[in-house]
Length: 141
Image (cartoon, rainbow, N blue to C red; front, top):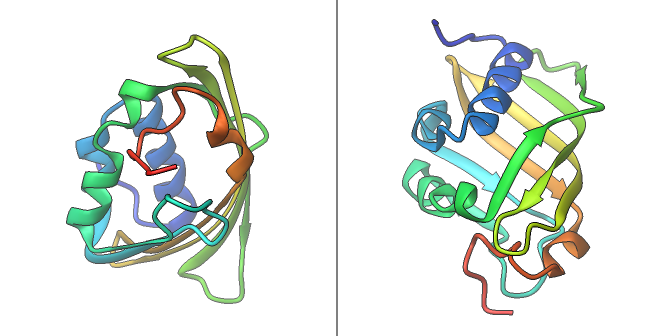
């Protein structure tokens, strides 16, 4: 399958890759100088990842800790900038270590240029990572 280039289609494709646990292909969607930000990250969690390598390192062990099953309630809103979308969604699945349910609400502001994600501000719920086994980023909480 060819990788979509519109921001909304590329984002939907990125979610499919996360459900398939294909983190290398997900990382390939990023521009080399992509920026991922987490404005609501709790202490000990990264708030800013600069560059594709940093994003890859952050996401490398995600499937070992969180087994995503679905992204229900997905809503993608176009903005006045055709390269930028605002996404509302939930990620549901289970925490691998404890087998506890995982249910996270997200709002993201995503910019795509030349078929690659250049900016991703992820406003996720910091309370959800307080569950044992949710710490895929190896934070120092």
